[in-house]
Each structure stands twice: as structure tokens, then as C-alpha cells.
Image (cartoon, rainbow, N blue to C red):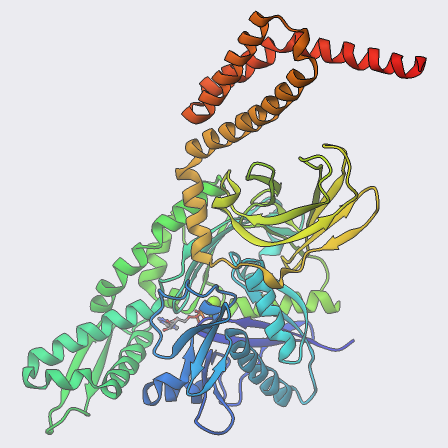
Length: 604
Ligand code: ADP
Ligand code: MG
């Protein structure tokens, strides 16, 4: 069986590993580093540069150097506005693209270029070809973001064996599959530009993600930015006359690099000497930066992770004392101040036994080993971040797979036609927590046709299946004809990870309104069934009613119509009930009429 590699396709850095004699090892790229910056530079002519060589071009040619492309994976145009990239992000035919000169590339293609380098460098160091991979994604990645990642891997020449969640991979790397049953683990991941917190539970050797939370605009880059600001202040205090020099893009890129290096060194040292010999007019700038100064910058940034941690524990219904382990992931967690703040949040010392920026890749490699049979036991299980369902008659959300269901999973429901003799039904696949269909995201829709039958007779089964990669397959089947339709997700509308956070927050904020809207919709559906039924009964058997009866029914009908206009749920409910009650004898007359007609037919 051929080897399978494990890949952490990170926002800032990517890594690749392989099992060697039962141990996961990470492979160095052609520059000699295990961490390959997720940066691609597109020169005016020739092949793109990837990794460290591309990173060096960031300052020189910012508009042709693409970084943090993971933020754009599977993202709907218009949702990209929050990022201020120095390269051009555009919207071409409803797709997010990156424009470089007269060339355009998609985020997926940029990821493919990064994956291709990882693959080529790994093959060089192994001396053999590799074509199978396990790739990690953030736990909150939605279906389309997972699919985009999978396609990027395939375009790079891999068979993508599995897409797994980053926190789950990290837990594997920390060896937590050997913990006691029902152990609960917090995975705290602070990377270059994103913060993720996940609570996992180990159950009979199986990991389950109980909850996820985070901030997609929080990470080491914020520390770099604030440190650059501090250095700029110190430089201008010393040489106010060269303030304008600081604005030069090359100068600020070099300053940023210096700041970044100083930050890394301060994780191990108490002070670093910063020297800037490249100021104009023989000016020199020397500064001894202390760890305390860096801590003062870092503290407020890391404090912002606290509320996410608390919410995540709340969602998972665990208190800090219920946690068996807190593990650290992401380069920033190498900083002592971060470890200290994490210990305060979770009221325990975090486990620091692994290299935090390598743990996800090591876990992906272990998962690759499990698939290839080199390692036994441990199955990975994850949960759906948002509920999935379909729109029903009246515009309501009908949940088929609730949020936080363990995947892989399969669920279905039977639907019928709401209108007599309708020939088709539009199935809208929705994702979200709101009661009304229109407030949730439409992932896609399709039409299913069936033979015309009276109202409520058609039987359409809809099945949702989420596979081990977290990808959704929707199947609709007309039970009487057996005709099947599988949802094509290519036309799907996508949602960003931030939007997921927002959706959950909104569903809580609107819970009461949503409930009342739902009750209103259901009540008005009832009215809209009653009114035409009464009307047709009156034309058929109205002549058998007394004038007083007729007037009474007219009054009840009027009351329902007025209640519909008033938008008052209670009023509509009682008007419906009164009309229902007041037309009972009408129903009796209808039945009598139908029976005597049947008799007449039999006699004739
Ligand atoms: P991502 O998951 O976003 O790809 P990483 O986990 O590789 O990112 O983390 C990258 C971030 O970690 C960068 O902001 C980098 O500066 C920071 N980092 C890496 N090593 C250290 C260190 N020793 N001290 C402080 N920050 C570090
Ligand atoms: Mg990461």
C-alpha cells in the first residue's frame, strides 16, 4: 500500500508529514524548514515562487504576492471586504478571485500551488512518489470550504483520503486518545491570524467535537502590528525629522521583520537588542526591548480569547474543573505570557509537551497512519457546526440534522405535496439556526418532479448524509416512482466562518421572535386552508342553510380575514377555532350530499 502524507494547510504556515517505522515525522521543505509559509508570489513571467522565497517578495512586490489565502477559501464574494489585502481580490461571475496583473487565480488554485510545493519537496526528501493525503481544516469550516480544500488537494495530484478537523488532529498528536474514557479536552489554537477554541470529548477511543468558537481576526499578526507601532514611536521620539521615512513600504516591511524576529526571541529570552542601521543620514537606532514591554502589548490581545473560551465551555456544558486536559496549538502559544493567561482562563496548567505549531500536522500524519493501517484503533468523529434542513411550505426551516450532531451521519424525512395536482416540488437545502427559512443560508436547491395527485398524497423522501469528511450529500426520492435526484452543490451559496458565529449569536437573540413568527406562520397556514374549504362548501350546500346560519358563517369568515390583517396570533387562533366550530354542520351537510350522490349513482 502506498504511503499517505498528513498535511496542515495553515493560514500562515503549512506542514507535511509521513509515518516512518510507526512514528510521525515532519519533512523539511527545499529551504530546510518544516514550516513552509503559506505565501505564493506570481512573478511577471515564469513559475510562481512558494514559501520562504515568496515571503521575501512580499515587501518588494506586495500586489503580486498572495498570503492568508485560507481566509478566502470557499468564501462568497462580498464577504471578503473585511480583509485589506495588498493584492487585488475581485468578484468574477459570483466567484472570489485574485487579480495579479492581467492574470486571475482562485483561492483554491493558490492553495493547490502551495500543496504542490509540499508534495514535490516531500517526494524529493523521501525519494519516492506520494499521491495520497489527509488534509486538516478548521472545525468550523463549512461544507463548501471543505470541498474547496479537497479539490485543491486533488488538483495538486493527491487522492484526498480524509479531511479532518485541526483540533482533533492536535489531540491525536498530544496522544490524548490514550486518556480515560469520557475525558474532556480543550484545544486552544492561537495562530498567525486566527484564534480557535474547541472542546473535545473522548468516548471509547473516539473523539467528538462538543463545541467550537473563536475569532477569525485575532493572532500573532496583531502582536507584530502593535510591536511595529511601539518601535515607530521610539524612533520618531529620537529622530522626529525622519517621520516620513517610516511610511516607505520597504522600510516598514524591514521593521516588521525585525519586530517579528524580536517577538520570537522574547519567548526564550528576557530582552533583545534591536538595531536599525538602515535609517538615512548615518542615523542609527538601538533599542533594548524587554519581555515586559512585549507582554504589555500581548496581554490585551490574548485577553480577547477569554470570552470565546468561556462561550465554548458553556456550549459544551463543561466547567474548567471538568476538563482533563488543555492543549496548546499555534505558534503564538510558545509565548510564556500566553501560557500564563491560558492557565488563568482554564484554571489549570496547559499541556505543553508538543511543539504547538507542529501538532496539527503531526496529528494529520497519525490519521494517515491509521488509514494506511500502520497504526490501529482511534476513529475520529466530529460534529456539524450548524443545523441542516429544508424549507417547508410556509417558509419555515425544517431541521433534518441538528447542530452538533456527530458525523458521519444520515437522516431523512418524508414530505408531501401542499397543493393538489402540483407536478414538482422545489427542495431548498438550508443551513442555520433560525426558525424562518429566509433567515438561514441556502446551500442549494433543486426541483423534484412527481405524478400529479391530490393534496397530501405525494410521498417524497429527503435524505441528508454527511460523510466522514464533513461533506453533505442530499438525496430526494419520489417514493411512488422511485425517481431520485442528488443535489448538485456547485450552485450553492457559501457562508464564512464568521458568519457561522454570527448565525448562532443571532439565533439566540431572535429566539422569541422566531418562535412567534413560526407560530404565526403555522396559524395562518391553517386559516388559508379553512377559508377556501368553507367557500367551496358554501357553493355546494349553502342553499340548505338558513339565512341566520349563513350570516353567522360570513361573520366568522370576516373575523378570520381581519385577524390575518391584524398580525395578532391569539386573535387569529381564536378566529380559526370559531370558524372551525361554526362550520361543523356544514361539514355534515357535505357528507350527506356526498352520500346521497353516491346512492343516486348506484341507483342510476
Ligand atoms: P497558522 O496556524 O495561522 O498557520 P502558526 O500556528 O504557524 O500559524 O502560527 C504562526 C504565528 O505564531 C505567527 O504569528 C508567528 O509569529 C507566531 N510564532 C511562532 N513562533 C513563535 C514564538 N516562538 N513566539 C511567539 N510567536 C511565535
Ligand atoms: Mg494552524
